[in-house]
Length: 359
Image (cartoon, rainbow, N blue to C red; front, side, top):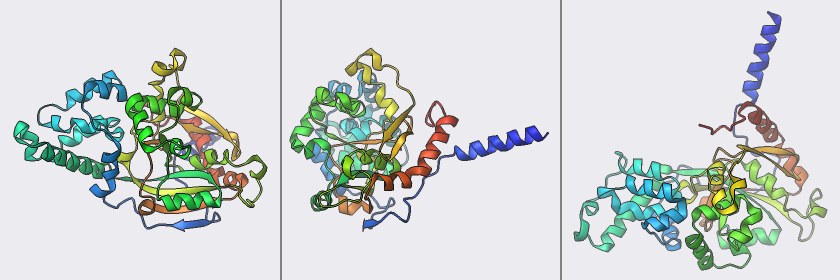
């Protein structure tokens, strides 16, 4: 009986330890900026106007196949027939096409009512059809809502000021000199899935894309902070920054979900063999990542989107979406702050070997 009691207590303890829970940034970490953004704020057409400027919407099956694969392209077009055909071009926006099943369900739900121009055929003008698609896009964006998510960057003070002045967090490719038009051309020419595969298997990015038009956001602040700790100068990794030395700046932003892709890392990995060969056919649900802030490694779950939320193009309207910015001056400061998260992830890895998001 004592043994059974101990075994039950051990199992209960393990289960409790393996329960995911979001952990706040410790109060000891200095906050260097705050904003008024909220996850509950409505999403307006003006806020999403940049999406229409940066993407060439197309309903052609060849384009959708390049972006999402031939099987998904065929299925999504079949799901949007009749009056719903008007909304097919929206599938080429990555935040819609990677969620096409949810989009199709939304269009047929009581949450959305197609306007009369959807039945207008040739009688509806091109301008009326475009206006209706925009209305639908904003409605679906509000259906998905906002997410509080994070981006950590290793910056010196000048770099942090530059981001604030730009009111935008640029993708790596733009930081390295590529223009927005050049990055747009990469996404249109290579397709969404190839861009995401290159981002996931980043050692192949230069060969696959040339420059990177994507950006990563992470719903767990610890994930992005650990990654950013690897970009601190080695000599200053564990010493307070002096002069132009870098710190880790952690941005918390409330962004529309529709601006990010809907695929988990494991879903992205399924596309890898076509671009990287058959040896990439198998992808483990967990991967162990080592960095100065996690020298023994931290387990990341590839089956849940909170681990990494891929976006394309940029993160605009930064001041409008800003919730807070923290600064970690050393890798040791990051390591100390993320220690409870590392412990939790280890427990989750043991409790869910196939990933929390496994079907």
